[in-house]
Length: 229
Image (cartoon, rainbow, N blue to C red; front, side, top):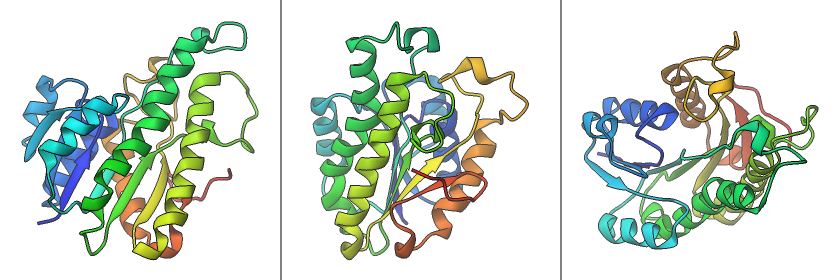
């Protein structure tokens, strides 16, 4: 039975991904800041409180997870401040620090911690939840300084991971979910292109599992097209 760790699994895309993995027969470790009712209801192998922005929390999770094999790490947890708090005239150090701590440093440090476990797998995969707003080339609207920069930095980190781990057989995939009706950005829920988390997760699951090591380090839209940096 393959093993997966999913962050941000109490709601949204993380919860939908964990549900897919359970149905696919994975041994799932579902994590979030708090072990809430939705997390408990998943029926995961284990649930854990994990703050990816906290090195001590990552260390505690690694201690609990132990030395077992890890086949799939999904870094889904993310934060986004309201747009009026993340503009050129309003963004401050606390907004920037929160975004980078969770969206960029968290995936890097959790991957670092669990890398020995991933290397025990015959087909290890890392899926990092990015966003199209992290594309520098595709930026035609400005704004969202902390969120946009943190996702651009995540893409850079993920590309470096992919290059460092390619010869060790670890596939790294960056994923853009599109507009999704989650708690991350309620202002987007009314958009005609906004989809439910289950739909986005199902599409991204297909992308993630269709790639091989030659595709490592690439940035994919949920509908299948490769996205620019």
